[in-house]
Image (cartoon, rainbow, N blue to C red; front, side, top):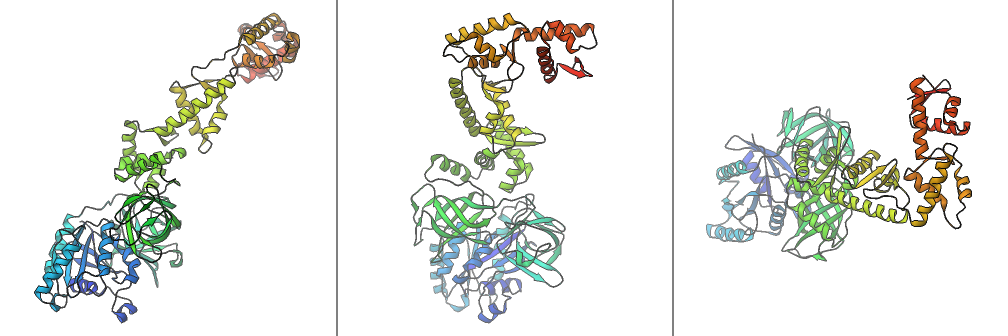
Length: 635
């Protein structure tokens, strides 16, 4: 059965609470102070059985301007709103402010209840109706019915109930399968039970014994019992007013505005990227870095508004804004909010959260504005793409994206497949975990690496390239090393880079010798071939050739990298030709013999004991041979 939350709105003393009592038979003003003063101060809650049999939760909000904060805490979970207007007074300042708030929060269904009609004549009622229609002309209530009510004389109540029933049948179903979110609008204790929190469950479901977390506090708790509309229940589902008894946390540790959800399912932030709409009738403009009061869910937070795409926002304007918060919060992309001036506390606008955990942004950047435009579409695949783009440096995983978007991993996976199919993102699999980056980020890092290697090759034409580890550390120092390795492997697979031993170079790079270097190289080759296995030290080669003002060691290092020479230890090299011959001699010997000793190998090569030792130790390192009891066998 569809779950519905009905809410009231309107000016103080226009009969909201009296109307709810007439409809339900229950009083929502329960505080002594409320009864003594005859006004609503806190949110009131009850339920209503509709003619169709559906049971709807009801939130009665205070109408006094001093308690607008409490009104805002209740309105975010409403499906259908009853805008209450007293016939003897008509539209009043708080009626207009409430109407503006409801419109900014994108409430879609509503009815206008014209109360206290028994106090005025029919001509006056018609004048008030005309004023109401004019006031709601550009709002979600423009096509709504005005139902004449007298709560004290039981007039119009049945008609109101029937109209509410019709509207509740038209509202969209809540998402009951997703990660649960319950913004807290009250927290108290009961003797024998402990901590109780109440709120409207926005999405998902909660069950007795569920482990939960209170955001942004980071406190873990467990659900001991649940009440829905005052009755015990095993489960609460989206769209219901819920009271939850939790164990593991104290009342003093929780605040109104905190959110209950599953452990590790949401992200805390001090910044939000939003689309902000300023009211047409706002007496103020929002300048860059204006201090505001942000009302998000059931929470009030102080924030600075950094206007990203304009100098400032004037009445009736909309723009992209980064809200920099003075305390932590947790939210979801798509959440609606209201902003009021810090002082005087007047409502100036509201909007929608586009990024619930953004990086710090600079103003007037075309790429940033384009990203926010994409997010504004509300397309889940597009929003996921932008989230991956924003967090490409982190190589976000499915779990990371699920937490950020407060969305189940199954839905993230489904939309990831679409993005991969459209070649918008690149996936890297590490064990059982996949990480993702945007194709724009992939191409940027690819181009940066190509430019870096190109410059490196120009300066180091006789070197194979850059050590793989150096390249990984330079570009992927902030992620798991293996993810950086996978990125480099992909560039190799894509024929952009190549690897030679531990060195990475551009695919088409080859070591090139100048004419003078070629001459030195030929002389070194001749010397090394002449010496055969009795190779001299590097220092001896430099002395023998004795090139004036020439860096022979540079050419020797290049020949080592190009594998014309093989480096056996810090100061001993051998020509590649005789290195390979030494391996052939070794293998031929071991065809006829079980093992080979140092002396046997020295004699077979007709070289010195020292060189034979160095060669065998090199074979051991390269796993060509294995030493057993002073002799070698093939590995």
